[in-house]
Image (cartoon, one colour):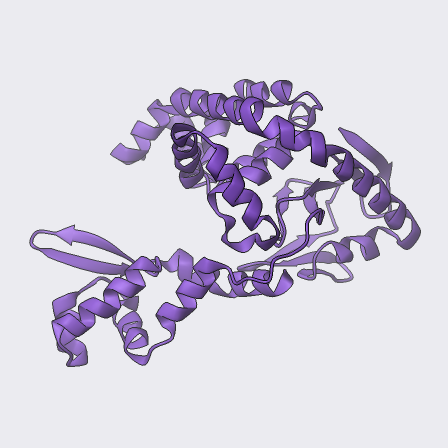
Length: 338
């Protein structure tokens, strides 16, 4: 639902309230609550209400779509995803071409041209493509169950607050101007003379030249993330609505990561694995330590998701989970932003 649309010097500016987007944000918090300190208690309570089968299915879908963050990109496909009627929004997934559905659902991990041609795909990737309609059907079924049985009640409470909050922010934007307002959305948004600079795990630079549209959505779940959407001629920002008081706790996954790295031996192990796989035996020989000692440190790093295992014959090799390592600066900034 559009609450505001007007041409400005930079681009056409649109403020959008989408219950579908808000529901997807809630699902991200449900399966990955660690950074969302305002919503920790909510996530705990909601998990307790959910049927075990539905929760496991939501976890499975989240694991394939970057904890539901990838699925949020569907909101950019058509206005139907912003419909006030949630069922209309959910069933809009049926209108998305299967190739585009799979590319978006898997957050770009499968190249669109490979999906369309079905050439150059690995056996596992081809199996995913052939099961495309299964993923679509499962996503729609889970979203409907979650909405009807649980989230509809949430919306009755938060929806009026979100709309009122967004109308208030529109008044502020009209008073201070578009550029000054966008900078207030998140302290990792920077505006230069020629572009937006968005500081995430890497810097995203979006030039003003060629920019046609700026969409601003709202969510009470997404804090402290800097959620953006970038497509041809369009950039999307998310306004973080604070409906609950923050909780003075540390994100557990960040704490475990930092704890696992806070030891000189484990840092040496990290360096030993950095360029490739390594076994307990090879690391023990390299660092001149016992296998029992190395095994203890590897276990802690594995439990913190810094490493993952791969069996080859009679040996288990450890490899570096580069995604977790790359996310450390972002996770720290997200904690500080909170």
